[in-house]
Image (cartoon, rainbow, N blue to C red; front, top):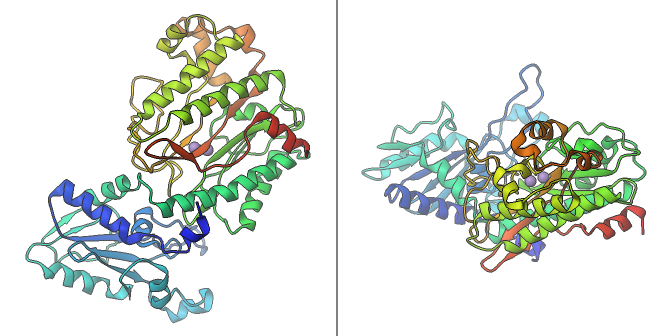
Length: 461
Ligand code: GLY
Ligand code: MN
Ligand code: MN
């Protein structure tokens, strides 16, 4: 994939608008109407005059491609497929502090829209569009319409379907979005390897977090897709550990789950490797199980596969592996039926990835009575061109596992004596970002995970 060439074009906002409009037509039967979305408003922190960190609204980005400008609006006329972007007008008092805002010409050159107007023209444009047809509907997102915006010219308003349409359309990525995710991955991969090369010398997790962030920032990836998890030893058993402040020497593994974003598109990569440069017998055994889980699950991917089935495969391999280690004992089918493996793999196998790290459209069921599937963030058959993380793990978390040891239903399958040898392994997770295709998949993450290669990198070989 020639990322540079693909990203030299404009973000495909009009293609996105066409897909969203088609979804709305199919769902509502309304053939024409107006799509209205707002970008994030600027604001100050509640107790001082510093700005709230800016995070563009995803629906606005999807339909405009404008990732970094606050107080903007977008109107798309479904009948003509004409898109108008509204940007903040020049406020002379603000220029002294912030410089000139984005000009209309620059916005037109940058964004895949037909016209750019100052935001002061928004209500007049909406009134004109509302009056243009005998019966006209405006589609907007509930709670995302500023009080100063008027839909009075329209015959009908729909605040339900647009948000759903954007969320559903986002599942299937176009080439441009895949290139953005790949670009984020390339930067994060290099930062992961910088951490591997420096892990032996580091004394504390925060040194490595700083290194990761700096490596990304040096390449103009200033923002992370999520708070980095830099977890040494037993800290890795806490799934979203973000303290990143523990001393490291003498511990076995470091779990690094970190990824930058590129123009709002996320990378989400986890690598687990030995702090000393050499796996212990126990950590290598667990690593090998998790790597097999990941490789076999990736091999199963192609258009139409049920994510539930891939997740189930991960559990089956975990059970086989933990039986071979002696941590589990008994019949593998009985163990699966009892859901005992959830003690060691308490999270889902992965999630859609896009503008959000946990991207839209997965339809999780957090009320699922089956503990094996409760935290699975995607409960669908995967369409071609969706991007999903494959991130199996095995964890030795006292807080999670102890209740299983007290419950005879599970305790019969766990050998506590053998388990005692593994607490210091903490946790192993391996996470890549995968593009699902018609016949298989493409791994968008190219970062070492072979255990011997990891040892070599850490030892500086
Ligand atoms: N980094 C968060 C996750 O993997 O879901
Ligand atoms: Mn993830
Ligand atoms: Mn992750």
